[in-house]
Length: 208
Image 1: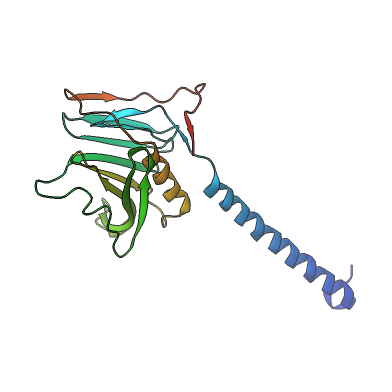
Image 2: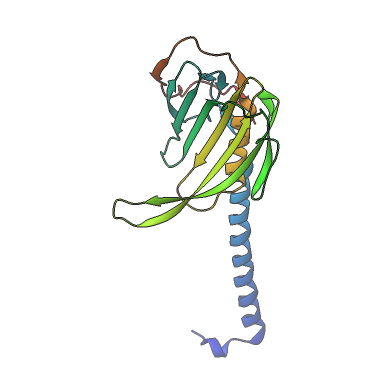
């Protein structure tokens, strides 16, 4: 077998070219996979009532719903239990003008539109301090979207996945949930119930 230094020059050049082509193809494929994940359609479940709103979660997520007469909170996790979504609906404090916060994006925020509610809002990434059972203190990135309604309610969507920085796919998920929110009316009485997992044979109701 010929030793490397015995290869002719053209063969060494060809081997280097092949190596760079393989490396470039691998990097290109990785970028394609990331882009496809970011642009993958988001399917939503049938809506459930959270306080005075109808809310649709991403398909495959499981939630615990706890409603109060005038407010509500929805906590949900994905199928792998690696991502968490919290939706809160609360009364706006007395004396606070509806729209005073949501229509004025500040530093580190970006505008978001709640299509189903026909309201402007703001979305921002927040680094929250967390402590492990071993006592180690670190930070966790959280994505939060907020709007308020003329009817006197504030709506908050909070999303976290516990690893890495928030990306375009995370913001698209928040946007899809925000777009699907609609007004349901104030519940007449409290209710606490667990939502079943969506049936495997059922189809989605919305494509974002």
